Length: 198
Image 1 (cartoon, rainbow, N blue to C red):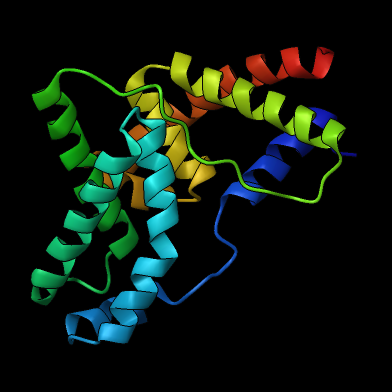
Image 2: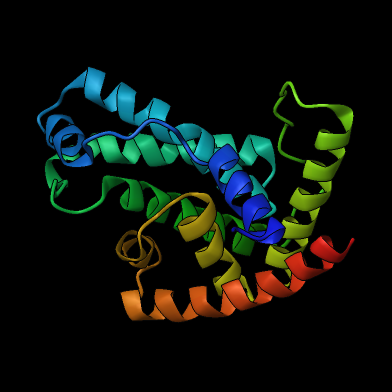
């Protein structure tokens, strides 16, 4: 039987990852060929997760929207260079992440006052309070991790990237991603044990 901590973590992951699975290779090929509908589908599929990711890295919502727009424009303008055998999702995250790092470096300050808008559900107030507590705990755990480890955890666990996709997005080896995830899961278990005891 699954323990309550693991169950909460699984439910959180399911609530924050996109339900729609698509053939990314086919979409990448169509975008490369100039298919506007495929590009719109790709945009719709990944905009929200990119936004959540950038805001979770202390990027203001306005700046995140701007970075995302520029990343998608870059993909479209350079579509002839797309390799359909590589993850286009990892590529768009890599572009947005790199631009975010440049923005933070240039501005030398972070906007941490803004939060991601809450999603409305039909849970009871008690369920919502417990879910909010869990989300705060997970956010705190990620924040307390070294930056690269927290980023890897967000990509692989929350955004459902494969290790290969995360490695492409962060320009490191899959083994490095695996090591970061091992340490991140250890960190997360410690935090979730507190939640379980609560």
